[in-house]
Image (cartoon, rainbow, N blue to C red; front, side):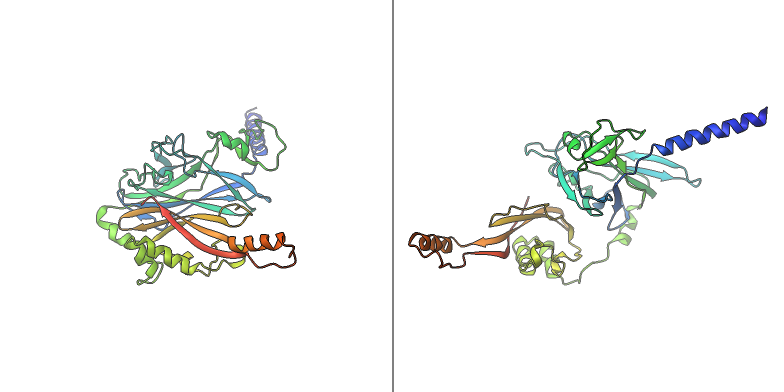
Amino acid sequence: MKIKTKHSLLLLIFAISFSAKADLRPIYLTVEISAPKTKFTTTELVQINVSLKNLDGIDHSILVPGNQSKGLKLIYFSWYKVDEKNFYTEVHRDSRVIAMDTSVKGYVSFNRLDSNESTTIPFFFNDFKNAQRHINSTYEIPKLAPGKYKIIAWYYPWDEELAKHAYSKYDWKGRNEIPADNPELLDLPESGTQSTYFDVEIIAQREAKETESINSCWKGCHLCRAIEHENWRKTKRLIRRDSKDINEYNMGNDLNGNWQKAHRNIAFLGDNPDAILASLPSYLSREIIFQNKNGIHYFYLTWQIGKVSRVGSRINTLFDMIGLRNVRIRYSRVRYSKLKWLRGDE
C-alpha cells in the first residue's frame, strides 16, 4: 500500500509539472545588462546599460522610457547577495515611483525593432546633477557593504496606457487576457520580463583607483579633449567634419566615422529614429551623452538631410510661366547632409 501511495504521489507531481510546462509561452523580448566596469564604490557615478532585443521573426514596436518624468519606471533593478550555499537573497530593490521635475511634459517612447534587432538604454547611477531632468539618471547605487552582488533588470510596461498598442498580455497560464489576432503586438506576460543575473562588486573607497576604465581611444584624442574641456563648439565641429558624408542615407550611422568609435568621454550614442519625413529638407536627431570630470552631459545631434535651393526653384517656376518647360536647372540635392546643431541642457 505504501509503495502504491508513493507511486501515485510521484505520478501526481509529474502531471502537475508537465501541465505547468505545457502552459509556458516563449518570451520574444529579451533583456540583457552590460556595463563599462563592474567594480565600483557606492558613491561614484556608475553606468549600467540595459539592452532590449526582439527575438521574434518579424519586427515589433516596444516601449522605452524616453523622457518619462512621472508615473512608474518601466525599467528598475534588484540587487542580490549569494551565500556559500548558492542561496539568493534580495537585498535591495529600486523604488518605481518617479520623482522628477514635471514642468516639461515627459512621455514613454516607441522603438521599432526588426527581427533580432536590439536597442540599448544607458542608466547613470548616482548622477544627482541630472536626476530631476532625465529618467536615466534617477537611479542610485544602494548603500550596501563591500562585496560581490548580482543585479537583475526588471521590465514592466503594463502601467502605461500605450502598452496595449505594443504588447499582447497573457496570464501565468498562457492565456491572453484580451484575445486579439494582431501580429503587430508582441506577446508579453502580465508579470513583465527580466534579465539574467549580472555580476558586480561593490568596493571600498580606498580601492577605487584600481577600477578606472582603460581608455578606449588614444590619449591625445581631439574629440575627447574637447569634451573634457566642455568646448561644445569644437566638439560639434569635429563631429561635423567626421560625418559630412552619409553613406547610402544611413543617417549619421557610417561606422567609418571616427566619432562613432569607442571614446572614453562618449558614454552613449542613441539609435537613429525609426523614420524621417520624406519631404526635403528633412532633419534627423540622435541622442549623444558625454561624460567628463564634471559628470554626465545630455545632448542631441541634428543633421539636415537633403537640400532645396529657393532661388533655383523660383527660376524653374519662371521657366514654366514663360513656356520653357523643357528647361530645368538643378535646385535640390537628395544626398546632401550636414550636422546643423549640437544642443543640450548646458
